[in-house]
Length: 273
DNA sequence: CGGCAAACCTGCGAGC
DNA sequence: TGCTCGCAGGTTTGCC
Image (cartoon, rainbow, N blue to C red; front, top):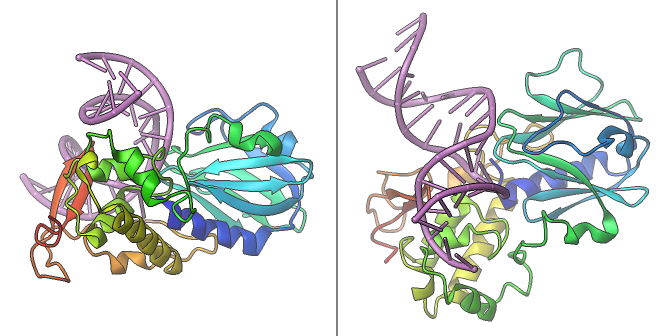
């Protein structure tokens, strides 16, 4: 489900609604998501105050009193749902139930269970194996023309697959890789190492498409909703994603689709050479 | 090491 | 209506 814009939308919603709340109780309905919950997961969270919610790549970072950080990845179908009080009944895939001191209940629901939750010490957060291999944030200065040039120089895979590689740059997934390449006028099947003199436009396109998507509250292809239950709106502004056979808004050519590393890619055969 | 397919798991829409 | 098939926003693993 979520790429950077969707995760950022959820982060902002959490920051707005549960920052400064204190966790009273945590209940798990199973022992694992994609990976097992750590030992004493619930105990480590009990009576902790949520100092703030950050984001690194597609991970949400709940900073807690006592120096721990609750790390959450939404996988494909993970979502947080905030209820004004303890609900009378739970949905089938509510896996984690956070009861807050003020009576509200935060649910983590994840049908496919590709998400994960763990707890990391704040001082060694980015030394954790989840984070050590991650590339720069797309809006960071370090995601530069020189960096991209150096990183892609030896990569023989196609540029679209490369953009989705979280060791190159974080946050770009299947939707925004296609959309960024459309804005860049680059064909998705170009080998990454063959992209010359286009590093600046790639960086700019990634930033533009992510920025616009964040402003739209993310994309809701099937079921993405923010913490308050609102759908994103960026799916109405896709240039190519999920538009196979439809006319390109720029030139009228039919949008095409293909399969790259097991994922669907969408592009305009006319605009992207 | 790099590239790629498969695996993890459930739900849903298309097509028959 | 009901079945099967294929595909879905991510990441890791294991094979070449």
